[in-house]
Length: 598
Image: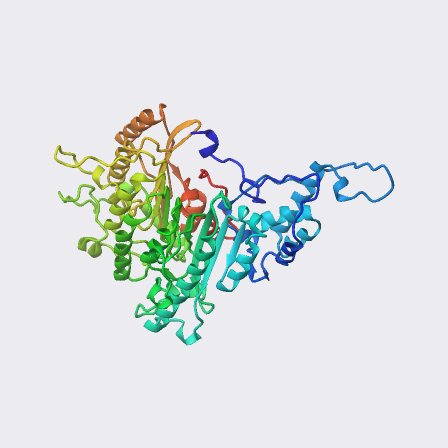
């Protein structure tokens, strides 16, 4: 592993300016381009031109853009001329022109309302080429934009395909009246939604299917969302659920309707080679059926990354049905996938600070509570399982806290054997994922799983709570170490939890300086000696170095979103950069990730 891949970041990176792989090089002669392309550029970063939506800088996928570093204009630059005539742009040295253009583009991206990025493209052909490379890096599309999208990227605009990194398709569902805000959709309304969903995706895939890998060598990220203009973010969460449990958002699951639209093809969709990443993020307020996810990824033969960030259901029965559907579909996801990130989003809890202080104080040492230990010979991890009747009787879980499905965790664990990076947050429990490593092995039992290529692993567990005993926590940490012995490529493992009252993370990290074991949380945890010994063996076996065990670090609990954004070492994998920005506040912006995905 190179030190540049996963080195701990100590300084903030420069804001993204140019697409990945797009260096700012100034040609010595003007670039020849068509004037029609200039006319197709947007008048500003958020306005519509030729039907296309160009997101502002803060809406762009931060992972699909890499910073080349900010450059301020030189403090003083003397340019000489042989005569008194005004010095033209092409008379300036290439380095100075590069500084000027870089500064202009940066200013337009940081303040899109004051500076129109597309206006820079009409300065000259040279500027047009470089500005378009930035402007076309990420596009927001609705169905009405697709013909203009095809025109901009057809034969005459084919060079633009190499600039495109991210497409966000917003499926527009029909409008409805205010009186229906809290009324579940009828079967007819759901069928209409499915037809819109099918038609929009099919139309885009028909266009992209004509693109070759050479046109877009870096690959595209395809982000999908579905929303009605009548939808509101406020009602997309708990406020959109009635006392009877009804919801317009949660009671229906959008799926394909190929028979109704008469589309035919492989899995119902054409095969698209240029899409290598697929994402459904938290800004998709509607439920997309797991079968629809399978249909899409099955039509992407070169897909390597899948990010799926659905919202948690507010009905236990509906959540269980949905999780079982996911468990049935995941085994059929493409074998080309190397990175999977599943994040079950939740409403941010309204926290009383005084109550938080009282709860954290009451938590104290986790050894204070021992009534959660269950001596069940069939349950070797010693924990109360969420789907046990006994668990329901002993606990009164807050509705904002995630629930987990053991069957889904076991399915994900089996699927992860071929992956390089995996994160499952709030959708599964690490106890179920590591279940074979809690058990006492016998000769008749099957071999333990082996993860030959897994580099990053991030999981959540509701066991990480101040009411859980140190013994129970250390049993989990020990099981994770036993699993890590079967992961020779492992460079980061993080087990965490965050809820209304507390947050904590147990992590093993490897960087250029060596291997490190850490606990960070809103309550104190003593890592047992046998846990440390087991992790030292992992470090010596796979990294060839001794393990540094850091002192436990206690942090204040400032909320669930804050913990995810500010304290997770594997945040770059756990949550998409766009979603991280959505969860952030103005007073607490998203910091640079501690570890960066390559």
